Image 1 (spheres, rainbow, N blue to C red):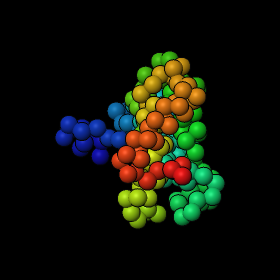
Image 2 (cartoon, rainbow, N blue to C red; image 1 turned 30 degrees about the vertical axis):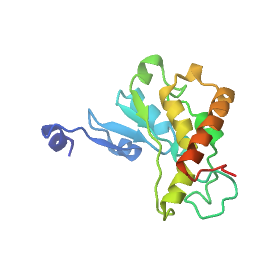
Image 3 (cartoon, helix red, strand yellow; image 1 turned 45 degrees about the vertical axis):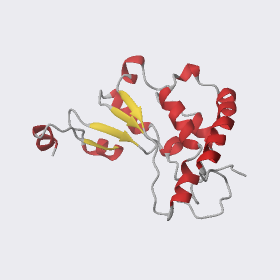
Length: 168
């Protein structure tokens, strides 16, 4: 499959399960089952997009008790503080290996989401934390500063008429 894709000018990219069968030479890995797959792929000099469930699955509930069903009812919850604590470049990688981490991604699977209001509730304000994680060097991140700026952002959400977690 990789040869076919390469012949068409495309690059093979797959969820971290592709590591289990021997990885094609120029394949990219989407590390979703935690960070281990991304770490392994980077150590093997493959490009990686980090998207671990532990930090980036914003379809997981935002509070221990949600008022509706979410995909993570039996898996815990993912509050904004945890999203913000995500280190896109895991400490287990050397400086050279970190060069293979090309970015990150948040995921919102919609099996349990039937309307746009619920989508808004699930992504806002966590998408602000994801954005800062991906665009701000780790050493410049500051939770207290982010929290203060988030209060201003919530006023924007209100102006937009957005349904977001913590609106009340």
